Image (cartoon, rainbow, N blue to C red; front, side):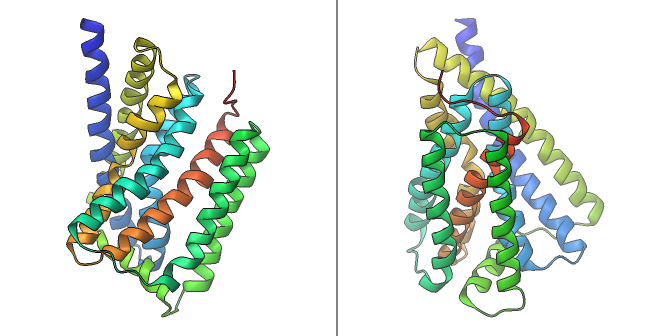
Length: 271
């Protein structure tokens, strides 16, 4: 009974730390960026997407380090499903989402291609270091393309990314912003450790696949920062920004998280 209670405490504590740590990290990182004069385009297109995906990254790295590869892959797949169904669903409940189609076509195309690549990599068990480098390079190419095409532009895409940056209220003094960023990173790391330990124990105690736990409990937990950002967007009357946030975060999940994880420690999804 004691071990079962500890397992649930680890999962609950991990979820709370991931959510709080992710929120603080985004606020700190955006605050530092603004004090350094970084444009809202860069903040919206890169920092917000990367910051809200940090829980998935740390959790996947922790899972692979523990030999729980199913949790790592399930986390990415489940997080993207949660982004689309849960995050957008909640945002739409708060306020109808009216989008600018031209603002979404390019990023949506990148997400579709990344998702197809993800399916092929899983099918062929291709989480090797060269594949990790290729995925990470593709993410960097996407970031460079976004900055080159949208910098100084008044297009719908550039406007959307600028609005994404504006959702995060972070105007703290530089030392406070740095403190928030450091505290956020610490919270995310500790939360990932707790969540993965509890999730692996949960899978073993119920004799279910680690991938199932990764796609459900872990994925929903690591998607909480995206949910918070999208809810704020909807409440401020910018529900369309929630769509951009979901697309950007999902691209980061596939290309960045799986890419970096495979570089750090190549792994296999099949026994």
